[in-house]
Image (cartoon, rainbow, N blue to C red; front, side, top):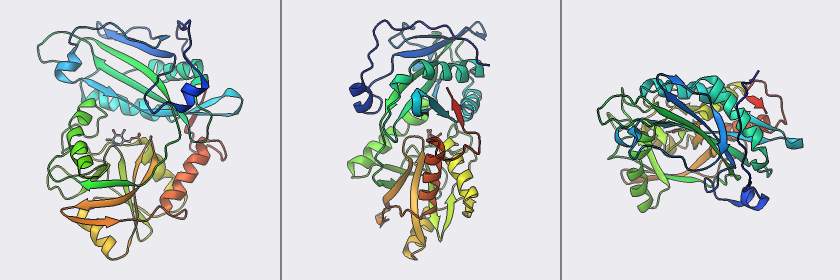
Length: 352
Ligand SMILES: *Cc1c(COP(=O)(O)O)cnc(C)c1O
């Protein structure tokens, strides 16, 4: 039974099919958003209101000390105006772990999950209908307090906003293994979905782009030797038919897509190894003709094949993902579950 959340509807919907179906990702938000505030040590009642600017402190605590975190997942259209949300409980659980790491109050399911479902239900005409399109759901939680003293804020705001997201054309991504900067290190915040991780990684991406790459391949923060993530995605390699992916363990963001793909690979009886893999091993496997494929894994692209990888002046190229690659097969399986072509055997979909 979902909690009932009060709604103030917009008096002037901005939705037009042209806007919804053609806007570049993140350029337009749907008509409504959910909002809830943490004050005096507890959550206030959530409300759904027209999407728009809100008044906050001149320089809220998030701007000083960085208590700002987020999530990202999608709702997919179903025939007859219905929709399904993919694994909202997993994102809720991940946000709770991020909250703990960042000393922020956890958002209860009655706000995160029920709020998501109510918002998607209300703005369901914003879900694009084209194959591969979705409504992207972005919950954010940030510190709104004003004191300059360094301590956790006493007030926070939680917002869920959504935006239409067209089909993602995942051409191959070209990555430069990063030698100067690191994204994460043991004991740091690499496993938390916090804005600070993104701020700290932007310069590396910009410098890689100047050199003709899309993004960086992150190596571990201690030895700059082991592969950790592909830009803003998790990473998987196929070596001699076995899928190899770095293990979670504090420095890697525990992707819901990564988890889903691993589950489906298991169903498909593909051998999987969650273990450390060095950048040298990747190049050696390629030189020996054993590196079948490599890909970034995440909500936006699901599976983004890596086309070119460079490290210390050496470079390797990979062909397009073949349809019988284990990664391509897991991707097809995931799409079939999301679109309802095959049974939701892992209970991943929540219908509005
Ligand atoms: C969000 C994120 C991912 C992917 O997580 P999904 O839940 O699969 O979208 C991977 N790496 C980083 C750094 C991320 O922030």
